[in-house]
Amino acid sequence: MPHWEVLIARLTALRKNLPPDATESVVLEYNSLVQDLRVAARDEGLGAFRIADGQLTPRVASFSFATRHRPGTTTYSQERYCDDAYFKRQVDGLWSYLMERNQTSATQKTYWDMTDDELESLVIPLKIPYVILEPNGSWHLDRKGIIDELVKRDQYIREMNSRAGNSITVHGGVYNSNLQQGDGSTATINYKAMQAEVTRALTDIERSIEELGLSPSDKDELVAEVQTVKAQMNSPKPKTHVITESFRSIRHVLEHAAGAAMAHGLIAEVAHVLSQH
Image (tube, rainbow, N blue to C red; front, side):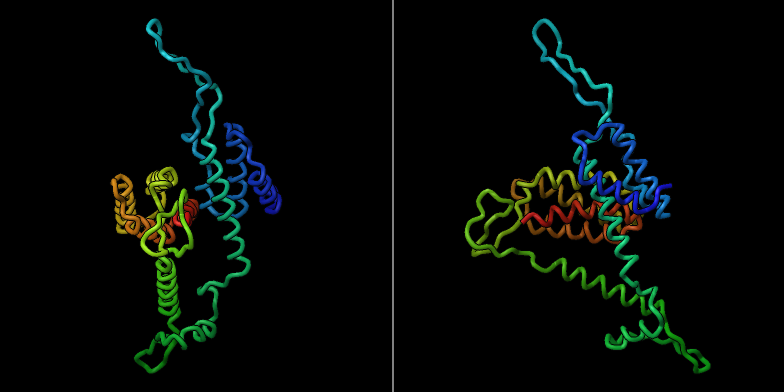
C-alpha cells in the first residue's frame, strides 16, 4: 500500500491534469486510487466517490441519416466512457472531502475532544445548564447535555447565516447575466438561465437519496424540496425566492446526512447553484 502522501500526490496530479476523455481505463485507475485512499484512511465513506460501472457507456462513433431507401444507422464505440462532467465532479468532491477531513483532524478540536473544564468555560457565558444534581447532593458535569446544546446553537447560527443576504445589491445593469433586475438596485438569481446546472443538481440528488442515510422525515423533506424546485422550474413564471429557499433547505438536509461522504459532492453542487450571482 503506497504511503498517504503518495496517494494524495497522485490525486493532486489527476485533478490538475484531467484526461480529455474519461475512458474506462481512466475510470478503473481512478477507482483503484479511491480504494487505496479508503484503506489508508480507514474511511468507508470514501467509497461514495467511486464511479459505478453503470456510469460507463459507449459513445456514438458514427451515424447516418435515414433516406427513402434505407434506414438511419448509428455505430457505437467498443470502449466505454464516463460523462466528463460527472468524472470531474467526483474527483473534485473527493479532493474537497479529503482536504476538509485532513484540516479537521489536524487543527479542529470537536466538542467531544474537549476536557470538562474547556466545556464549562464555553457554557458559562451562554448560560447553558451544565451540571446534574444527584439525590445525595453530589453533582457531575452533564457532558452530553452540554454538547447537544452547543451543537444545536451552532446549527442555528449556520441557518441564520445561510438565510442572510437573500437579495444582492448591484450597481448598473445586469444584462446577459444570471441575475434579474428588480425594482431599485435589488437583483435575484435567474434560475431559468441556469436550467442545465439546476437540472443536473436535482438529478444527482435524486439518484443518491437512498444512499445518504437520511431519517424518514429528512428524506421526505428532501424529496418535497426537490419537487418544489422542479415545479417552479417548469412554471412560466418561477418564483425565485421559493427556489432559493428550497435549495437552502436541501443543503441543510444534506449537511446533516449520515452518508456525509456522498453528500459532500451534492452540497458542492447546491452551493454552486446558489453562488451564481
